[in-house]
Length: 195
Image (cartoon, rainbow, N blue to C red; front, side, top):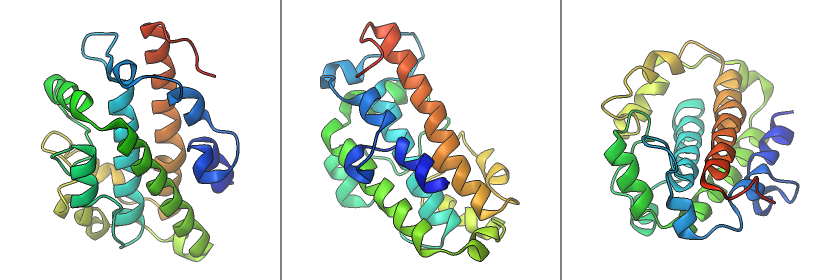
């Protein structure tokens, strides 16, 4: 069930199936991706990056004790000078990241994250996913700088639940909520509902 739902929330290049992401983000110029049609709102560029960073950190550092996809090379290519997931960013930080982000590379990064998530889920059995996320699991994300200064509330929120729940929350619920937000941004900006 996870892999079926996850597939809808990633590009067809990741899953070879129908994609809400492609419908939401394809066919737009970089300038359109950077627009913030409401004061204090998010741009499509920022949402694309934030969904990728959050899934990368949560799956690869919290759900499993692994290595996140993001590294210095991705940071340089995306033109992002921060390792956090964006939760708690100020309005200016959201604007600056959206304006400087290399959108083509951000799409590639999100695809790489989606592929890694699918590999991890396929390789782990139900017994592993029934395990509980503990403070040490979340501490890996904190140590990597993924939880920003105004996002400390994530630490208790991410722990004391099964790995399966944390995986579903980030891989399905979080992505779906932000894709809904992205559809609203498209609508407010006058871009239509996507293809």
